[in-house]
Every structure is written in structure tokens, then in C-alpha cells.
Image 1: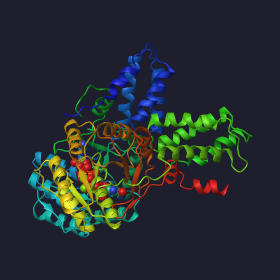
Image 2: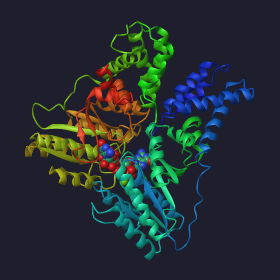
Image 3: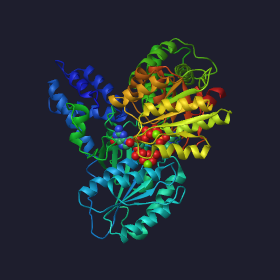
Image 4: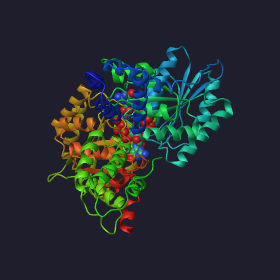
Length: 300
Length: 306
Ligand SMILES: Nc1nc2c(ncn2[C@@H]2O[C@H](COP(=O)(O)OP(=O)(O)OP(=O)(O)O)[C@@H](O)[C@H]2O)c(=O)[nH]1
Ligand SMILES: Nc1nc2c(ncn2[C@@H]2O[C@H](COP(=O)(O)OP(=O)(O)OP(=O)(O)O)[C@@H](O)[C@H]2O)c(=O)[nH]1
Ligand SMILES: [Mg+2]
Ligand SMILES: [Mg+2]
């Protein structure tokens, strides 16, 4: 069993003082920056907190703590407001394109989503669109076998567009409700690789005009300020509809979610909390803030 | 997306005006900008705090050299101090007196361990050594296939016992085989693990006890944020790390995590990963990383020009 060193203890301690002083804000600044919110988001959050404390004439540190919690939740709601409603139509494959930088947890998240949709009674298929990384296809196939889900794959080194083309066709032929497409990890700074994603999108749209109905960016919870650039650049290249924050079972606070919510408002939909196929949850601002900052050792 | 530190420092000193000597107040203003730049580069909060106060002490009262503007002066002090922490000299992989040299890589999930085992094996092979790679990750789906595929690309053999065997036994048997067959370097790939995962941390401790590696390298992603110190500290406490590999430096991450890790565990940075391909690995140059953390690849030329 993993034991998380709870930041909530630090938060609780901070508010255990007799009055609200400038020290409190300084300590909060330190804590939020250490949670990867970044300087700008931290400063804005604290400004909002000061305003609220003035406006509501808050005097008790315990009330200030509640005000902080409210502000943090409100900030994250920027990232749930813009979520697209998902419409699953019988007979039309719902295509989920999964993208992100190297090693964030894309392939594992695909397995988790496959399981999730399977549990909803949907017919799922996987496409091994990462033809580049060593044994990426084998990795997806292992998950396919474990979940008893078909995997459409070509040989290593093949054109990802071609596998996706076959995947789309197979989805129609075999009446798949959900088609999950894995892609190779790529840094957002690599022009050719980002263009490749656009090409993959076009291939999908030849079969289903509205595909990919979901474009999921997977971000590693331990990522620092670079996560903001990742979200921005992937959104520019392929219209991200959802973000998953993976690896939240570590000690990282996933503070980048706040920065993304504030600056970009890109929808955040899922959190990954382990390597097992069941370790996926819906992203919920209240749960996120409570589990990572205010809660007892809560499950995410 | 950020203004560069040199721009911001220049602005600060334009406001204060040019004097012969840096006053405490000038330096304070400048240090605020330095602090912010380091935090935006993901250097750990506490590391930044200590660093800034050290630099401040050095900068106060320092005469502004004629050749440099105060902004450049502060930057050059900051850079010097950064390089000091990052390690002024390159420390190569320590090879054992009596082969085989045993190298183990450890780290969080997805940091780049498996890829870097192959990259390092390839470097060693080119130096004329005989590396053997060991597949001791029995958990991640297709981890063994991944190492074998890479082994095929560089023509380096992989020792594996499949996914049913115990990683401690695999490592022990591999070292024995290396002795018998004359392999000179054994590179052990381990599964990704969280530093708070007790059974997995015990497992890696047992592997280390069983084979007594000459090098235990922590593989860390350049994009890591503030948690880098907690991760590194715990791996170091349990395993006594001997070096660091900083991966995915081919992107635009500033790599402040490296500075954090260096300051808390003190082990040298041995390699920099600069891409997915097997040959995308470089020795570490402290001055380059310092400039990058400051968000100013051009600072060196800036100072040289002055
Ligand atoms: N602890 C933890 N580990 C995870 C989680 N999600 C994925 N991982 C692990 O992270 C590592 C990388 O996961 P992958 O799914 O292969 O990542 P990827 O983004 O597909 O990687 P590339 O295809 O190489 O870019 C694996 O060891 C996974 O088991 C999570 O939520 N928590
Ligand atoms: N761009 C870039 N990608 C890298 C670099 N090093 C590794 N990668 C990629 O990062 C991803 C993860 O690398 P792995 O070597 O599988 O990482 P790992 O630490 O062995 O992962 P686990 O075994 O799952 O913990 C893969 O997609 C690699 O191709 C690098 O220096 N630059
Ligand atoms: Mg993958
Ligand atoms: Mg690996």
C-alpha cells in the first residue's frame, strides 16, 4: 500500500493560528508553488483569496481556509465548464484519439478507458497507432488480450495513418461502438510529429465526419510548468476535447491542472491513479481539491 | 512564453539607474526576477530560496565591472553559482577495476529508463566494451519485448527470464552469466516505481543488495516539477544513488528539476537524453544547462560579447 505524504497537514497547520496575517499568505504561496501551480496562478489565486477575505469580512483563519478551498474549486471549474457532451450513436464508431508527450501514460489510459466503456456495455476496439516506439504494439496487444478487446495493428515502422485507416474500416465492419487510437509519444516542439497528428485526424474524418469525437491529451501529474505549454501546443494542433492527468497516485499534487484551467480552460475529464486497469476516475474539482489539498488520506 | 531573464533584469536596472556598485536594494529587486525565473523553470521552491540568498550575498557590494551592465553582472554571478551546484566537471560512468561493471537504472514510471539502458549500452559498445542488458521489469506490459527490440537495433544481447521470474533472481543470474561469458558491463533495467510504493522500493533495494551495482543511476524526466526533490531524496536514501540521467531534454522544458536533484542528493549528472533514437544521448555540460534553466540559451554569447 502506498502512503501519500499529505500536503493537507501542511495546509491545516497553516491555518492553525490566531489571526490572518501576511505570514499566512507567504506560507500559502510557498505551498502552492510547491504543488506546481506555478507563480502566476499562485499569485492570482492568493489575490482572489484576499479579495474574498475582505469582501466577506473574514476574520477567523478557519474561515479563510474554507475561502481558499472555494477559490481553488472555482478555478478548476474553468476546466469542467467546457466539456463536450458525449453522444454515443449506435452504428457510428465513437473515435477517441489519445495523444501526449513521451511516457505520460497514454497506452495505459487507453486500457483503462477500454475497460470503462466495456463496463458500460459498449463494444470496444483498439488501434496500435504507435508504430514507432520499441514494442509499443506488443504493449497494446497485451492489454487487448487481458481485456479481450480486438487490436488493429500493422508492423513496427508502418505509417500510423494506414493503421488508423484500417482501424476505422474495421470499426465499421465489426460494429464497434468505441475505437480507441493509441499514438506515439511526441514532444510538442517537434513540428513533423505534430503535423502527423493532423494527418491522422484527416484519415479518421474520411470515414466519420465528426471523428475523432474525443481527443484526449494525457499529462503526467509530476509535470511542472511545461505542462501548460504541452496543453497549449497540442490544442493548437488537434483540438483537444479532454485532458487526463495520470499518475496522481504519486506525491505530486498535479498543480498544473490549476494553471491549465486558468490560462487555457481546456476541459479536464479524467485522473489516473495507478497502473492497474481500474485506476481511472472522472475529474471532479471538489474531489481533486479535497483529496490533494484538504482531505484526509482520501481516495481520488 | 516568458520574457527572458536578461530582459527583465535589464528593465530592473534601467529603473534603478546605473551606479558603480550594486546596492542591497538593487540586488533585492534583481533577486526577485531571478527567483521567478528559477521557479518558472521548475527549480524546487526551497532550493530556489537557498540559492537566491547565497547569490544575494555575493552580489551585494560587488563592483559593476566596466565591461558589463549590472544586468549582465547579476546574470553572470547567477550562472556561476548555478554551475557550481550543477557540478563543474563532467563525471564519467565509473567502470569497475575488475569487470563486469554493474549499472542499474531506477526511477518513476515512464521517465526513460529502458530507452537509456539501450542508449548507454550502445555508447559502451562503441567504446569497445561488451555490454549485457538485463530485463528486470516483469510488470509493465511488453517491457521485456521493448528491451529486446532495442537490443536487436544495437546488437547487444538481453538477459531475460520472462515475466514469471523474480527480478532479484533475474539480476543475480544475469551477473553470474556475465562473469561466465566475459561481458564487461551489465546494465539492469528495472520497472518504474513510485518512491512511496513500499513493496516496490523494497524490491529494488533487494536487487541492489544482491548484485552490488557500481552505478545506480536515477533516470529523471526534464519536465518534472516540484516533486523531483522528494523523489530523488527517497531513492537516494534507499539506494545511495551514484548518478543522474536527465531525459527528454530535446523539448522546451527548462530542466530545473536537475538543479533541484543535484542540490538535494549531490550526485553528478552523467547523461542527458535528447531524443527517442538510440544515439540521442549526450554528455552533460553544466554551462549549457545553467543557461537553459535561466531561459537564456544566448547568455553565454551575451556575456562574451560585452
Ligand atoms: N503510478 C502510475 N503509473 C502509471 C499510471 N499510468 C501509467 N503509468 C505507468 O507509466 C508508464 C508509462 O505508461 P504508458 O502508458 O506506456 O505511457 P505512454 O504515454 O503510452 O508512453 P509512450 O507511448 O512511450 O509515450 C508505465 O510504466 C505505466 O504503467 C498511473 O496513473 N499511475
Ligand atoms: N523525446 C524524448 N523521448 C524520450 C527520451 N528518452 C526516452 N524517451 C521516450 O519516453 C518514453 C518512455 O521511455 P521508456 O524508456 O519506456 O521509460 P521507462 O522509464 O522505461 O518507463 P517504465 O518502464 O514504464 O517505467 C518512450 O516513448 C521513449 O521513447 C528522450 O531523451 N527524449
Ligand atoms: Mg504508449
Ligand atoms: Mg521501462
